Image (tube, rainbow, N blue to C red; front, side, top):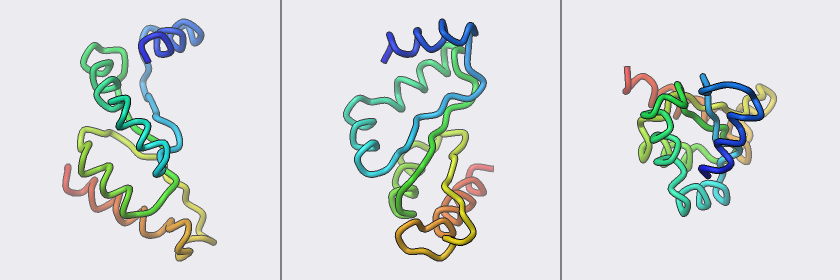
Length: 109
């Protein structure tokens, strides 16, 4: 992770990232992130000043989103898959995920 992070800084020509996003967290990618302790790694980069805001994009169920946000309340933002045509769709759960994120955000403020 350290090597990739440093390559990203170098390729973008910046000293830090305003927003650093873990991509496509769902069941499979979340398991990998947990195994590699990715959230701690990014939190460390934030503490060092290399990341201002840490977050993730999410593509799974509202229950998993709640699990992740409960485990990592230090997350600053979540990018959700919001499509109003799928708001009530049980496989995409746009509406439910939005409710989880909004509820969690209100607890933090």
